[in-house]
Length: 374
Figure (cartoon, rainbow, N blue to C red):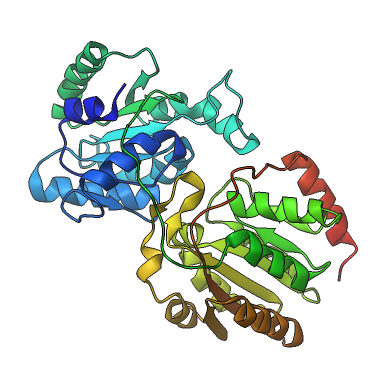
């Protein structure tokens, strides 16, 4: 189905969401049609943030908004759906468009398997009626579903379109770039060299895949790394938990701007704890690059001032490899909580692979390694 047909049948004029590769056709359409426009389209920090924005839009206009997300984001909307939108509370109608990763019977990465199994059940438990869009869904099918949804929306209930892999298409191309010459994989290669055999916690997406392949290429063990393949936004909290309990070991966290934004409250907690053995590196390309390259607001944020305001004792931004190396060496030579923001371009190798070890193997090997550290 052409994404234009879906948008036309829904008939809404405000969209907000967190990008998803399964919904790339929709994301590209929205960027091409509206860009980032506060009246029609906003990319939010996390899915709960989207629900709040959409609720405000409804309160101000009386119209029904659309929130899009990957199904992994369902966890982030449970609270606002149950305590804000539900008809037993405020009764705020909303349309969700959800990319179905980990659909049962369809091969996917380990972090999507269980989420895929419970996608429809979670919606049912939240009182959200769902309609599944697949490759065979026709325009008439969708119109009938939308007519049924309109009755539910008028009763102040929420509804969802769950989109299977390959169900939506969009012919126009969108190129995402920011002009920064640094390459994320090369940045991670510099970090891996500096960290040596010290533990690294890496964030969701291509960053962890690149770290895995760098270790492989250098013939090094993967036991030093915890690859946070799911739970976007939580790698820095994982690193903090390790740093607290391994106070004599330097812990490195490779984070991304989209992940940092998703649960930015973690910065305040890290700053308040102030572990002197945590090096928090935020690779900032101003994009949700792993799922297609759609922009984040981090490209225009002062990450350093935010970190300092949250209690980080040292924070610096770099946009060149030599400056990065100086900061990495300084992190090795000095104690103290620090954040290093690295400005980065958008893009990755077309042949970038995925970890060949399982998530459980990664955890077990990492824990065995940590046991031997102070």
